Image 1 (cartoon, rainbow, N blue to C red):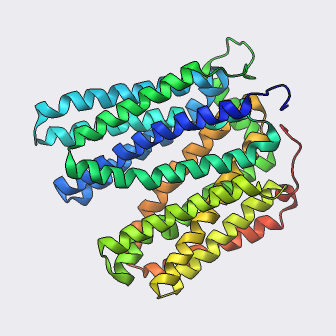
Image 2 (image 1 turned 90 degrees about the vertical axis):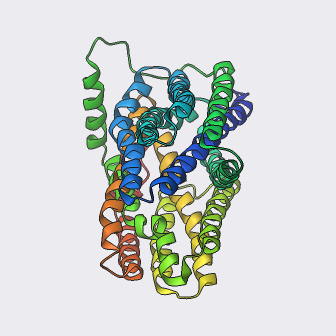
Length: 408
């Protein structure tokens, strides 16, 4: 395959560079909007509403957009969604001065967040499914690890950049940066030649039949059915340890900005280290083993985070948690890229995107309020234990651990 596509490394570098640039702009604006709404309103209701607007549309469109990625050009879907996000952001930037400090600003931010979420729901499945078009199968795990490293570095840098820009400038300044980074991404992708994708045969069948066929494909393949179920449990049970970590710091170790910043930085450092590890090592030949070790490690580390009372030990566990999360996420991505029928990969990644944002919303809706009534350290111990047990049960599932044939 390498001989048939000798320029794959150059294409991979250009593709991931363009995606990192646009991810930086999008992440920067996301932080800026959340912080702006938080500081302007000091309202949990507004922040919750913003969270729903940022995740729910993506949850609803991801699977549908995955079917689009199987039927049409993945490259142009990425370009189109990025362009739509850029246009919505441009409209917001032009509208802000006329809105002043009124509640219209908040309404405009919510509407823009919905458009940006829809765009992300269209873009992410296409990105996951396009990578096997130009990366040889034997290099997918390493390339996904390198991509995870780049994403972690961007997510590490974006909050600092957003804070600096908002301190020296305005929310509008961050919006213009996102517009520029989207233009850079579109320019690179438009010039990047992609191999002809294996897509659905020409058909006059209604689009809804593509969705039904995607569900049927998963239900008929026990491996992918079990993989998606495991992924949903992983996201749901990771919420207390992964997304409520800052809340535990505030309650147990003191809610200073320094402590919260350190936790975020250490977490991103762990994910970066995990990406580097996978990029260099490539994971186990059996991707399932890499996945289950990552999931089990997340469970055990969550138990530890809920049990220790020394901040340095807590930070060490946050660091290794970042490594374990990256191992698990990268293994899931690679398993789909290596094992799913190429004509179904868009729908597979669309469903994964739906499950990620959907189970994250469910987890935050359940564990967030529950943490006000149940000890958060105890909640971490219980969910971490459940996650470790899930990994152990899957380890002894022959139908899951026996690797299926490629593109089964």
